[in-house]
Image (cartoon, rainbow, N blue to C red; front, side):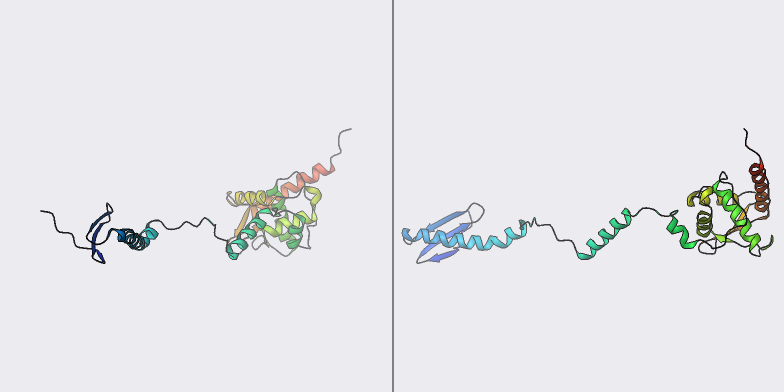
Length: 216
């Protein structure tokens, strides 16, 4: 035996029951003319009851994109400006900023490698500024590059990455041609006795080639 339905609303003697799942309305008694009014009340009640549920299940979608924050815009603009700047590691302006007014009392050979040009500059800097074999004078890599490129542009300027590569290779030789104090920032490079001997041989060959008359 089915359970007896409890009346949901009463309107002037009209008794009815509402079954939400199938939207059934059972009416008994009362006047038939009041049924439309009853239907309107039921519809309003159902709409009010379902409004929180529908809002939770089907939230409104805002398709308007969020405006970028000023901080993000500033950072993005700064990144673009940095990316558009050309590299100036070996530009004259960058070189002149750290170049020494001193220059060796000698002339390099433009055909030497980048590393040999740096070795030559370190040798004469130590020799002409009070350095000794046991305690040579040293220079940082930026100063070596800037000084050479400022005073000897006619002898093929050196490249930062090539000089760094060659000096690291020279430091790993046995015996080493140079030594580096990597506790300094930037590291300071010093000529080693084997490097000084190599520069002396380089200068002998350079002198011979400079004095040899060209073929007619």
